[in-house]
Image (cartoon, rainbow, N blue to C red; front, side, top):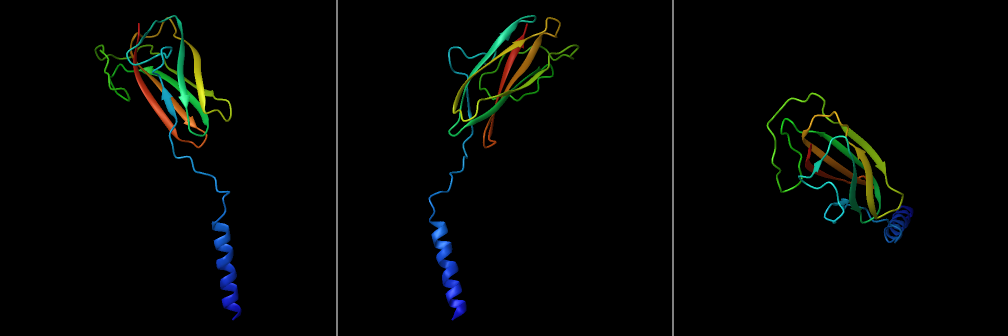
Length: 156
């Protein structure tokens, strides 16, 4: 009889705790990188000049909260790919790098933000190899979901 009462008490506690409305929803959505705005830069096949500073611009969105983003510019002289765009760009001949540009930087986004207008000033050294490059945007939300946008650009 004691075992039956104990079993009934455990079942009742299990039922009560399973009915709790305090359960947090789990974020399963990837954040969004939007480069469709009129001010977005760069976009697929854009050109950037050596010795100049340009402004990266994109809009980031998430259903719960954004986390951080990183930008990566590296040469594509060997024609490898991680483009996420449908449009292809005209490419130069395969070549060996002598002094390619390499830029990798992480950026924070204010806490609790769902939409963020990202901007970053990036200077292209005057003495880097001109040619085909990749411009990678990695956006992570607070939950850890990451979205990648790989653009092909040209440094002149």
